[in-house]
Structures are given as structure tokens and as C-alpha cells.
Image (tube, rainbow, N blue to C red; front, side, top):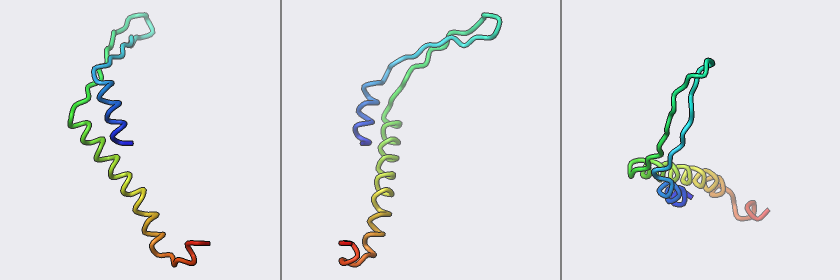
Length: 74
């Protein structure tokens, strides 16, 4: 899942979104947000996904390890 998310992030690199942030009198500013995906962001995303996967799989595995075979079959 983390690799797929990083691949989709790489495809979205450079996308822009624009908006007008205004006040109540009609004046406003034109704001452009540009998505920048670099290797530092990709490595942080992969690290978070691996950590979540390990924690999500380790806790149930430790609980299952404490069961006897007969209790696990029930």
C-alpha cells in the first residue's frame, strides 16, 4: 500500500491548484498551490507505512502466539 501511494504521489508531482482568497469587500488574493514530491517525502511516507504495517501485524501476532492450538481452532 505504501509503495502504491508513493507511486501515485510521484505521478501527481507538479500538480497545481489555484484559489482566490478574498475579503468581504470583493478584494482578494490569487493563491496557487503547487504539489512538490521529492525523495525525502517519499522516504518518510514509506517509513510511516512500514511502521504502521509492522504495528498492525505485530500486535495480533503476539496475541495469537499466546494461544494454544486447541484454543486457536475454536
